[in-house]
Amino acid sequence: MAAMKSAALEGLSSEIEKSAEGEKRGRKASKEVRRHQLIEATIDSLAKRGFSETTMADVADGAGLSRGIVNFHFESKEKLLVATLKYMADEYSAHWRSAYQKAGDDPARQLELLVAADFDRSICNKRKLAAWCAFWGEAKSRPTYQALCGARDEAYQNVFVEICARLKTDSAYDYEPYETAVGLCSMLEGLWLRLMMGTEGMDRESAHRVATEYLASVFPKQFSRQALGATRIA
Amino acid sequence: MAAMKSAALEGLSSEIEKSAEGEKRGRKASKEVRRHQLIEATIDSLAKRGFSETTMADVADGAGLSRGIVNFHFESKEKLLVATLKYMADEYSAHWRSAYQKAGDDPARQLELLVAADFDRSICNKRKLAAWCAFWGEAKSRPTYQALCGARDEAYQNVFVEICARLKTDSAYDYEPYETAVGLCSMLEGLWLRLMMGTEGMDRESAHRVATEYLASVFPKQFSRQALGATRIA
DNA sequence: CTTGGTTTGTTGAACATTCATTCAATACGG
DNA sequence: CCGTATTGAATGAATGTTCAACAAACCAAG
Image (cartoon, rainbow over all chains, first blue to last red; front, side, top):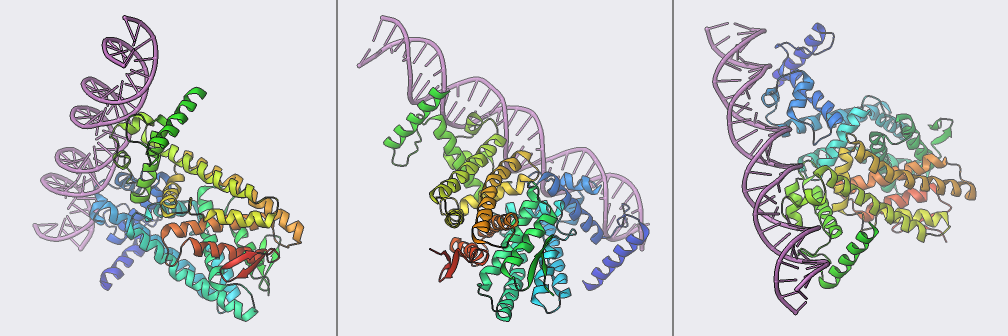
C-alpha cells in the first residue's frame, strides 16, 4: 500500500517534469493521476452544470477521455462523487490546519489567519464553492455526504470554540464562548453561500470585510477598525 | 381572470367546510387546491429524496394522484419546481414582513422579532430547510432559481442594513452598519444550513441562542445576556 | 327534476430520450 | 508477448412527456 502510494507520487512528479501542463494524455499516466484528473473534471461539471445535470459523459469529456473510463478507475458514479467530496474535504482541512499552525500561540492571530484562510483564493473560488454547494444540496438525503460535510466542520468548529474560550479568560470578555464561536463559523458558511450565489456586490474582499467587522465588534480589545475592515491590534 | 380566481377560492373554502383535512381527493378540488397539493408533495419529495432523485412519479404518488397529472396542472417538471420555489419564497417573505410589521418603530424590537421569525417552527423545520437547500444546490447553474433565491435576500438584507444604521446613530455605536447587517444575515443563513445538516447538538433553540448572542455582543446597549441567550433591554 | 351534451379534470399506458453500466476488442508499456 | 489501461458501442433501466380514453361536474333545454 505504502509502496503503491510512493510509486504513484513518483509518477505524478515525473509527469509534471515531462509535461508543461502537469498531466499527460498518454497511456503512461498512473492510476493516481487519472483519478485526480477525473476528480477535477467532476468538480468542473458540478460547478458548470450542477449536481443533477452532471453525467458520467460530462466528466469523461471534460477530462478528454472515453466514456467507460470512469467505471474503470472508480467503480460507479456514486463512488466518483464520494471521492470528489472527500478530496475537497481533505483539501479544505489541510488548508485551515496550515493557517492555524502558522498563527502560533496567539489566539487573536489564530482567529485572524483562520478567517483569512477561509477567503483564500485557492479554496474560495466560484468553482469550488459551487461544487461544495452542490454537495450540500444533496447531503440531507445521503448519509455519506452528510458525514463527510459534517466531519469537515466538527474539528474546525472546536478550534474556534477553544480560541474564543481562551480570549474570554485572557481579556475578561463577557460573551458565551461556544455561542460566539458557532456564530462565527455559521457566518463564514453563510458568506460562502452568498459568494456562491453571486449576490449583488459580494466578492471575496467584501465577504472578508464582513467577517473582520464581526471580529472588531466581538473582540474590540484585539481588533480595531481601519479603512478596509478590521485589523489586529499590536 | 378575476372571476376565475374568486371561483377557485370559493371552491377552496367549500372544500374546507366539507373535509376536515382541508383538501379533498375527489374531482371537485379546484385548480388552486390541486396545485397547492402538488407543490406540497414536491417539497416532501425534495426533503426526503433530494433534488436529483425527485421524480414526477414521486410527486404524483406523494399526492395520491396519477402519473400524468403534474403535466396537466404545471406544464413540465421544471415549471413545477419553479412554482415550488416561488411558493416557498413568497411564504418566507410574507413571514418576515409580518414579524417586521408587528415590531413597530423600535429598531431593537425589529431586530429581535426578525431574528426570532427566522427560527419560527412554521418556516424553520427540517422539511422546508431541506427543500431550500436542494434549490440552493442547483441555483448556481440555473438562473431562474438564482433570481428567486436572490430576490428573497435583497429586500430582507436592506431592512437589516436600515435597522443597523438607525441603531448606530441612535445609540452612538462604532460599527459599520452595512457590514454588520450583512454579517447578521449571513449568520442566519449559515445557521439554517447547520440546522438542515443536522449538525450535532444543533436545534432551533440552540441556533436562536447563537443569533441572540450575536445581538448581545454587537448591540450591548439594547440586548443583555440572560439564562437562555440574550434578551432585549427594556 | 330529468335529459343530453359540453367542458374540464383525471388516468394510465405508450413513447422517446437520457444515462449509468457492461464488455469485447484494441493499443500501449514493460 | 503478457498484462493493463483504454475505447466505444451495446444494453437495460429510469424517467419526463404525450395522448386517447374515461369520468365527473356543469348547464341549457325540455
